[in-house]
Length: 335
Image (cartoon, rainbow, N blue to C red):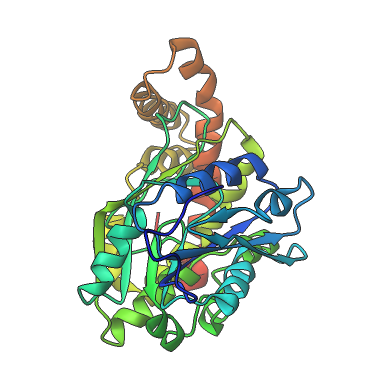
């Protein structure tokens, strides 16, 4: 990496600290560092926290220089992204904390957009996350807009607001049972949303800045990964119970979570439980049709669309089952 601070050189203490956790994503991390090196705003440092990589991810960043500062690499032994971000914050020197992930590529004006909003009075700024390219059937990426979740792939905190809010690894994230498995405890779930809402409820201004764009990598088909993430939906009822303000953005018709309808799946399962074979067949046809409509929107080849249907329906089953379990635990119905 190159990159130099304009004219007077870098300040001893940067204004912004960009914190990035990584595990076994060497090439994606390299692309992220190149995107950060292309930022129009130059008064920042980069802190990479290697969470037990075995592919040399940390070594890839160690020694790199941008804005006249060495990229700082910290190391921990595979205890997860939540702790990695907290470790990065503990070493950060900036008054503004910026968070993104190793599978992301911020736009050149990303830091500038976040800093401008904080200079204008915001305590928390979150931006638009888009998939790096159109997502084909069975592939996985992340998109986010003005949803109030404060995803850590694209968020800025004024440091004093972050510290007053208690940081990410807050007892609430454990007390409320959001981390529903060992994998979820490491990957993290809910701690970013809880922190953002703690700051907002304490009077901090929260602002969505659409110009703060991050492109998220599109991962190839991996059924195991998709199912694991689907099962983490069990945590959403507890999250909405704690932050009811999210219902307006994430829930339709009072109980339907997200934009993807699972009503035909539930109808199919209910008909089977009642031994109503004709009704089950009709509901299953409705379910199949709804998934066909979804995959057709990807404009993938027809054969690929048809092949993806069993996996799409299996993901529906995993998500729906997780939501039911989570609804019972949180005593809040979400389907």
